[in-house]
Structures are given as structure tokens and as C-alpha cells.
Length: 347
Ligand code: SAH
Image (cartoon, rainbow, N blue to C red; front, side, top):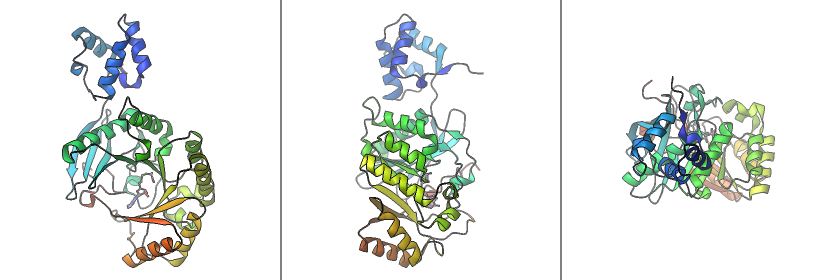
């Protein structure tokens, strides 16, 4: 068994202290930190500004746990789906979504998911474990590299809409975002990061209390409890009223508008009463709506609503002065679209 510690669990101060404990200079800690977090080194021998002895000494004490892009699928629309292998051989998926002027990384926060949304492919995988901060951070670094290579510009946006529920891995997700936004990491603006959640009221309030600077998206899908509970079992534990109260609290603390994500399914939430409930719900907290296309999952029996129903949604929302965007799916041909991340390859 490997008893060596993962060096990436140490922060910069601890790295500096380690070198001092080895009767070496504290600034070596900064050098190693830079190799690990800015240059993305995966092996001590790559750290060429350290002496051979120092590299050997590090190798005796530590391992560098890191992710590996195990498989990469390129969609006809430029979307790239990565199967990411973790140090314990579990797989998560991360997606590069290109558009004319920007590249968005869609990253995972957990291996599998525990929430059982009926329409989501990831729900069919058992939740295995949370991702560590560095495993989340590394997905972003990998997609940034791909963006530079395939799009000729760096990564511009991040969405936590891959596998898992980010608010059930709260501390690690926040640590990863801290590093992504830090000058000692990728120096990305938090305004370009969106965390998407099923909507856990307690954790949304915690985000607000922690005064986070990134954006919040909530998978709403329906503003009628009975309908939402059928699609998202979590709604039986915390209903729409509780969710709304937490979002009002979020807004009062952050002054940030919430994005609601809604899929419109045929025969489920495509009627007048569904739209009325949604309009009424949205009016109670500063928000906007993304209508997302449904990506069919094998044998789930759900179907995207007719174009007419979607047009009706848009018209009614706009008539009520609610901002609405219709989001087209990307990467469908490689099962990289929302809710399709389920490690199909290798099954
Ligand atoms: N757990 C988080 C993030 C992962 S899901 C959340 O629920 O928000 C990311 C988004 O994809 C959510 O809005 C989710 O509702 C949506 N989604 C899941 N399955 C989908 C599917 N089959 N088609 C379209 N969107 C789907």
C-alpha cells in the first residue's frame, strides 16, 4: 500500500514549512507550489529548477495525485467530452462547450449522484464519492488546455453542471473555485462561474452567508410541487416554498439574480397552469429562465415538449417581463449534453 501523502493536499504555507523542516529554504515551497498549481506538473522529475536530490527527497515523501484524460470524444459541433480517470481509477466526465467567442467548461463535482432525478442519466450511477478540490480544479485545467489547442483562446467560463450535486460536496467545490479564481491558480473571474444545483435550501443560505461571488443556477423544471416531486425526489424533502425562501435570502445577501433551468416535457409541464405557476414563482425573486432542451435518456419514456409549447413558454414569460433564453443542446451526438453524462463508454 502507498503510504505517501498527496502533496497537493498541502497549501503553500505547509509546503514552505516542509522545506524548512528538511533544513532547506522556505522559498522552495513556492517553487513547488508553482509547479503543482500553475504549471500542472504530474511528476517530481519535471520540476527542473529543483536539484536532483530535492526531487528525489520529494518523491520519497509524497505522491502527486492527478487526473488523466482517459478518452476524448469530439462532436461535430466542436463539443469535446472527456472521460477523466481519477487516481483510484474511477471515471467522471467533463465537457468543453465552444461558441464563437468563448469556451465553457462543464465540470463534475461527484462521481455519480445520489439524487435520483428521474430524467437524468447520471442518476443511474451510484454515488461513489466526492471529488477532491484538486480533481475539480484539474478538470478545468485540462479543458483550458484543450480550449487553447482547439479554439485558440483560453477557457472563459465554467459551469458546475457535470456529474453530481455540487452543494453536497460544498467544501471541496468552494476550495476548487477559490483556486480557480486565485492569482495563484487560474485567476478567473467568479462572475464567469456558475454553480448549478437541484436547490438545497440550507446550502443555498450557506452560500449566501459565505458571500460567494459566483453565479447560482437552480434546476427548477416545475413550480408545482406535485410535478416537481415526481421529476426530482429531493423536492419531497424540501419543497418549492422553502427553496424560494432560501433564494430570496441569497438575493438579499448577494444582489445576484438566480437562473432557473427548466426542461419542458410533453404532457408533464407543458400546459397553461405550468406556465402560470412558473411566472408566479419567478416574480417572487429576481431571476431569469433558461429553457433547456431535453436530451432523451434511454428508456425513460420522457419526451421534449412540442416547439409550440416552448414558444408559448417564451411568450408568456416575456409578457410578464421575465428574461428567458432558449438553450440549444450541444454535443448530443456524443452523449455530452446535459443529463447525458453516464460513462456510457466502457459500460
Ligand atoms: N446536480 C446539479 C448539476 C448537474 S445537472 C443540478 O441538478 O443542477 C445539470 C443540469 O442538467 C440540470 O439543470 C439538470 O436538471 C439538467 N438535466 C439533467 N438531465 C437532463 C436531460 N436528460 N436533459 C436535459 N437536461 C438535463
